[in-house]
Length: 106
Image 1 (cartoon, rainbow, N blue to C red):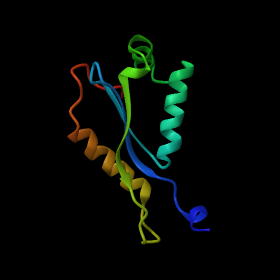
Image 2: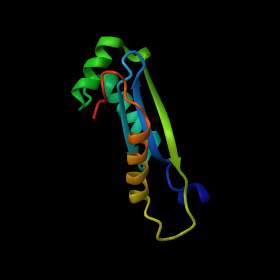
Image 3: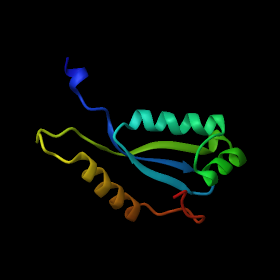
């Protein structure tokens, strides 16, 4: 029952081109689902971010890392605003993580 009531893992994730340093840094209320979706879209060649898709084709899957940057843990406060926390933490990480010499996939 606890499993059914638990929130999915949420937080900030990145998809980084380890050759160029470019990265997609984003948030999700379901980290596992989002990372799987991005990977699948890239593998199928249908990702909506054209620059990321072009780099995937140019460099190959082995040159990309998929990482959870920060996980937002479930809180006991019933009115805790997870959405606002995700936005706040995304802004924090975008300011903190240096982009590659070629920028980001934003």
